[in-house]
Length: 375
Image (spheres, rainbow, N blue to C red):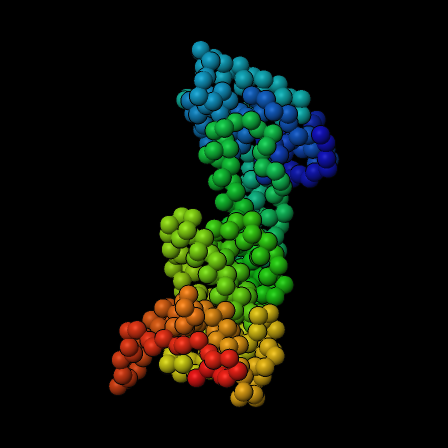
């Protein structure tokens, strides 16, 4: 299989007169010369090469390499068999113009030298590191997207090694998700929260238990004025974590949910509160708390819930509050203040001089009677 690729110059791996070689591991294992890219066929030398490339510049022990190549049943005389596999790999290097000294035998194992010009994984890490240190938000986002663009699918499926796919590929996938988070964070910093939402939703669908991605989606929805959807995403990730893993969301997600309920973003988050939603005062030290005004987050109230209409149906008001996570409805049809909101009101009330204590258990609200507003 051959496809077009790119490369960067580096003389350390060049054999005299050869094209510039570059290793690819962020997708199918391949070698490129800057014009053509050759995807390697599954083989023992390919598995050995993948293991060395995933530890660039480090000594990889002979025992680990034997498990990578042969699994839990290495051949008799495993070190000798491994040496033979290394010789086959060096012959493969010669075929593509890679210098023989690129792979080095050292006490205890082998080492393969590479840098950002000869290995896409190191190029990715360099771009992502530069993104974190860039002063200009546009430059930071551009670098993060360039890093993410180096990835392909599927990941190392032409490497038939249980050891690699069990222990190393998941770590690679986590590195990719760091770049995804960095891209989303950059979009938020530039105020592109509305444009970010479809991309963030797709990432969350692919990784439903990833807290960092869900937190970024919650913030993007909230800043776009889609507060009810932001709270719904928090409830989804909360249910996933508690039901699938038996753990609660981490402090970043919990703080973000409270910020949405309070109508403000916590320290260290991005930007200001999204505009276009009505606000009501709560016992929150005078801070405004935007209320949900529609399921689509457009900033316009739904039919029958106009800003100037005092005759809004109580059932519709209650439904909007439930959707926003401010009220809970029990099986009998009664409503009560959500526990998290109750705790916030308690904390806010206690911080006001001379404020009366908030009851621990708020009064339940009965279901609204048909045709009349809820009290």
